[in-house]
Length: 305
Image (cartoon, rainbow, N blue to C red; front, side, top):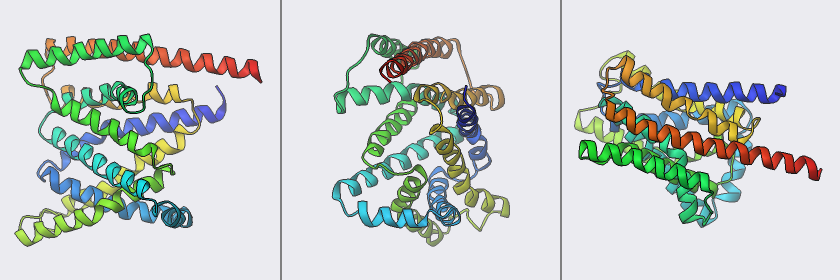
């Protein structure tokens, strides 16, 4: 493996590790409502990213993108949709973690790659390979097992998977560096976050600056906790093949699943195991097909060079 690929793999794997342990951070804030955590996460992420762009000398690129691209209605619409979708995804995840439903949250991020392909088929008219069809059948079986066993649709898992999948589609229309993209997305929703935080103060029910200094630091630090993994991912993913990114992405939900069961004592029954086994096999088939396809493309590229 080349040196730059090794470095890229380390950065990318570390970003997924950070995303995997992020529930610990939200657990430290479980005395704060999910909606207030979300408002602070968006607001402080925006300011953190502004400082990051300034100190990394990317401010000019940020302002230039705003001037040239955000005058287009399609770009503005895509940015608004992306901002709303990622905010919904963050809210569902924080709420799931702080209501002891990390197992189902991890399921959502296992399913997400398959959902993204499914959205590509229906919205972008992409075609499915035989391996992908098998993967969908196996994953659907896993979801149905959970649904029929508990008599309740796993809406947290599907909400996370579809909100993030649709977010990815919206991002395809906003071709911009990920750091600038996160700044734009949080900038779009930050005014609403500030209004909501103001409402909490008017209502006399805020947690920021009223509970403890520890709570204040955690709420303000939510901005850095959101941005830092993304920045590592942005640096690493550019240096490794896409199939490797796809393989490494399972680090995060695996860590979340382990934390939920082993650390926070969530239930992981035989039904869960059977359901997850179907989904893990589906992902193995899916990932294997992507790796074979990527290697085939590489061989073809070398022959034609």
